Image 1 (cartoon, rainbow, N blue to C red):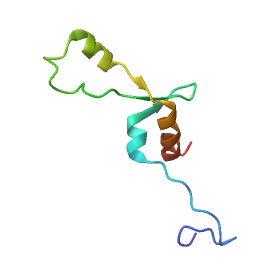
Image 2 (cartoon, rainbow, N blue to C red):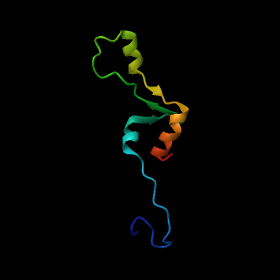
Image 3 (cartoon, helix red, strand yellow):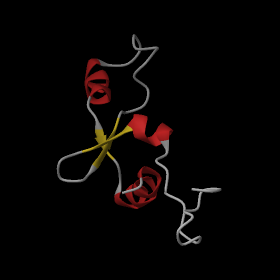
Image 4 (spheres, rainbow, N blue to C red):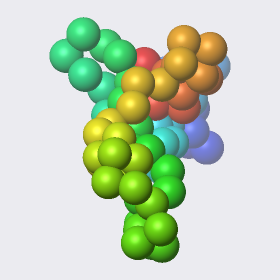
Length: 76
């Protein structure tokens, strides 16, 4: 392998790399949907209501138009 290309054919495309930041933040479910952690749950929790904090704890499904972009980053 020379310069990211295989030497037998000389014109093979380089491999697609997984975006590590996306990999750490997004989980793929068994059905193929993408899930993410909700925002606003790390600090200043005393002013937030109990119901709001409960909703923040649960994971959120990523919308369909964002899923297409994230799948490219994940190499799926």
